[in-house]
Image (cartoon, rainbow, N blue to C red; front, side, top):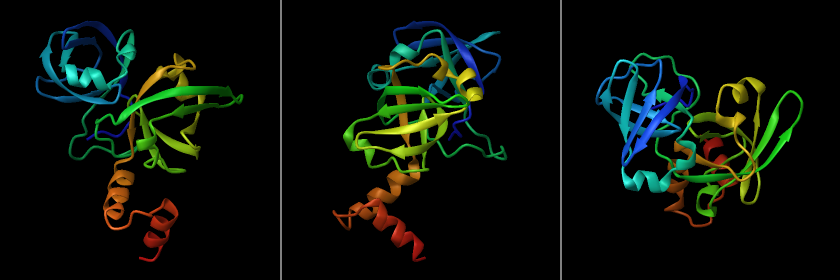
Length: 203
């Protein structure tokens, strides 16, 4: 389990077959789980200043592999007793999103990201979403996309500084949105988020 708060930007040294080797200040142990651009991976090798994780062919087929070069986001798995911030992130990438537009507003920047239709039902206004491992709040939900407002600090310290229109990103929808939707969807095919909110408000 993760929080979506990036520990640091690690440097990709190599990607050979299924092994991704990174240089970072953080020192994991063999067998540790660590999120790299939002994907939960297992540490298989550690040296003095590097560590390697396993990326199976199936995993590579799901992820935005073009972002696994240069710098990447890393976050170690939470430990019992850690301070909880961000939101609950599993490190299971649902799909790829695509940057549709970038609008600078002076003290913030709006990013509009499209996603496959089958996952759009899990994106809700003011809900949480994870983009390449970064926990963010959804500001607006559109027909086939959603809008995020990113502050300068986040842009400067994450891959958002490098994103361009057309860039692909790893996207993990909110775990609770998925659970609630599927729990009620099995009982009512006409369920909408407005109805879910009404049901939850009645308790």
